[in-house]
Image (cartoon, rainbow, N blue to C red; front, side, top):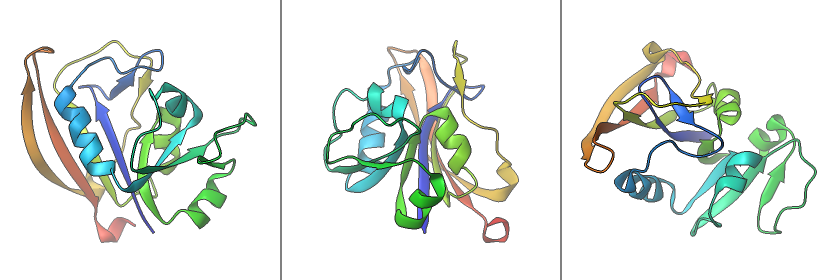
Length: 161
């Protein structure tokens, strides 16, 4: 199994407000696309509903309690154990409760760490950074948001998995 996670977080772990991102970082959206293209993306119902459309060149998996109907090309699971049994690779893309449920299973986390505080109603789960090796992939500045951010890869240390 090689599950990974990808998220963008504010200075205090902010993820979103009212099912939307509190920032607009075009370069980070390109980073997300580059990392997740040609992979499975795993998300909760609210994250799926927040997508503007199906993301191209990605296999969509939704973990939900809801019995609502999904398009036939969406794989739906109602139980995390069933999902873990069948989905050996992929990127967990949110939301907050999905991150919390998967954080102990992922080998890698690609986090965009934004150096600014935002008003939010959802937050990334806290995790023990001592269980991960950390590599800064790049540092960026967005003029429109007037904010510094960096792409960080956290790789789980073998002794903690």
